[in-house]
Amino acid sequence: MRLKGKTALVTGAGSGFGAGIARKFAAEGARVLAVDLNGDAAQAVAVEIGGQALAADVADGAQVRAMAQAAVAAFGRIDILVNNAGVTHLPGPMEEISEADFDRVLAVNVKAVYLAAREIVPVMKAAGAGAILNVASTAAISPRPNLSWYNASKGWLLTATKSMAVELAPRGVRVNAILPVAGETPLLKSFMGEDTPEVRAKFLSTIPLGRFSTPEDMGNAAAFLCSDEASMITGVTLEVDGGRCI
Image 1 (cartoon, rainbow, N blue to C red):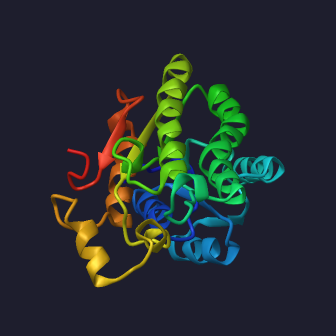
Image 2: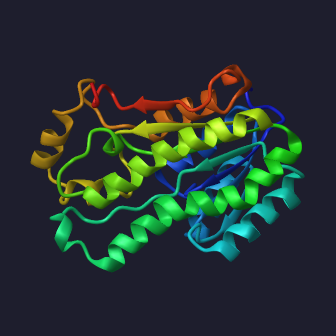
């Protein structure tokens, strides 16, 4: 019960790593608002963990404002924010990625973090405490070819995490990031281009521990970094990748 009495808002919580983080937080005692573009998926997770759900596009300023207001209305405060929602473009030469795909990646992976900070950081500053966790990717520090704009968006997130951490530390707010390697999530096929036994084997050969990341792996790391056990940890970008980036 490391998060007993805490409140948490998790974006992209309807599936994959976000769902794993929401489940772990609830198991550790937190009250969780599961947010996802897919409202039905968010609701399913919320029912499972005894939390609340909200459908929202995290790249839309008005919807993010409503998201923050809903969390405060439900819980009275926001102790933890997890910026997990993310998208990628299909693998391809950088110059062939469409402008629409580029804009979508930057909107969800970059702009959404700014929008959430704009609404939620003031709440945490007023409380004099808070924990923000950004879900980045090993792509930020060990980029794969043909995912250049996705890689770049996650690299931005590492710099943002450290900058947020140093600025918010005097106000009692910690900011960290986790870097998963690809896992069994809806984005896996997009990362690999195609999902075949041969492609999987080639991908897994680059991970020393020999397996993909799981939602449970992310939940465990996230719970620690957002708990009081990590009260002296801020600005850290933690690789949860089975050795992929060694």
